[in-house]
Structure formats: C-alpha cells, structure tokens
Image (cartoon, rainbow, N blue to C red):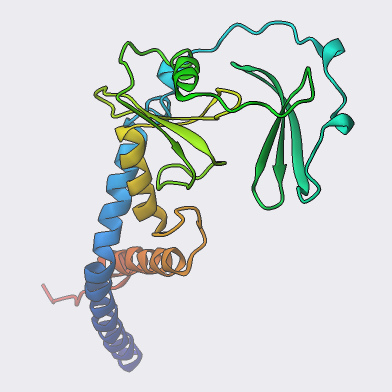
Length: 245
C-alpha cells in the first residue's frame, strides 16, 4: 500500500514537471495571441456595430410605388453575346429603376428598366448628389474618383465612385456609378475593426477565412494552456504527508 502510494506521488511529480514546462512555453508562445483576442474582443463589445458600419447616419429615401406596368421584359435587353449572366435584379435606386446584371466573370451591366437601354454612367457631380442624400452629414466631399480596381477596404463590384468626406470619422462612401446607390461605407471605426478582425481570425490576406491552420493550431494551444493551468492548480498537487501530533 505504501509502495503504491509512493509510485503515485512520484508519477504526479513527473507529470507536474512536464505540464509546468508545457504551460510555461505555451504561455510565452500563445500569450501574445491571447492578448490580441482579448483586445479585439473588448473593441467588438464596446464599439456599436452601427457606428462601425456607419448605419447610425444612414438615411432612407421615401419609397414610391414602382411603375411595374411600364417595366420592359428582361428578355428584350440587348445583352452582349460574351456576357454570361450570373444574376439579374430589378432595383429601385436614387437614379431610377434599373436592371442590374452580373456576369460569371464579375462584370456588371446596367439597363434602364423603363426603356431597356443601357444605363448611362453618372457624372461625379451626380454621384456626389445621390450619395449625400443617403447620409446625415453637413460636410462637403473633399475628393471623388472613379475606381477601376478594388481597394483594401472595398471588395465589391467595380467600377465604383469613391467619395471622401472631411469629417472626424474619415468617412469614405463607395457609390454605384449607374444607380447612385451607396454600396459601402467605411470610416476609422471600420478600419480599426477590420484590422482587429484580421488579428482575431488570423487571416492576414483576405480576412475572411475562419478555418485557417493558424487559428486552428493556436486555438488548440490555448485550450491546452487552460487545461494545463487547471492541472497545476488542482489535480497536479501531490498528496500532503500526515505528520504525527
């Protein structure tokens, strides 16, 4: 009985040594990522998502009855032969009623739903006019440009108008050049969110993959760190010897 108890004590000591080594090195390697997870979680919890998305300043225009009896059939649209349609939508936008088509290659074609003719591209002045109708702001745009390529904070369809506002949020509006609809809203709160989200899920390129190897590996390491800590606190303790009175 005494010999068996000694073996248990010796085994527990050896286990504590190995677990302590793992806990020490795991804490060093994983501790920084744990700090980033906590920091990003605090930001996500405290900054309202409406502010991040700029929804708190969004304005909705009055919805009028759609003249559906005047809409031309989609089959009559003069779609280019090399345009392989992926999606087709009928949209009511600030600039009117449109058919919006997207090809399998990501190209966009817009047609006036009342005439069937290709929708004319808006001028920068008209794009600004429609954009400012969709946001509660007294600031006048400081810059506007038509982008032909996607940016780091905009991954939507192109071309698109980028409109910069000189406000405290550093707002950028991305406006569809045909319909005048704001496709995306970006500000400093969103940019901080996007950066912390990248660190949180550890996808440093697309910032969308929630199942990448880095996140899987470090999440298992964090679980092991937690388990080893509780082992050292409770289960890893050696039985105390009873001394005679």
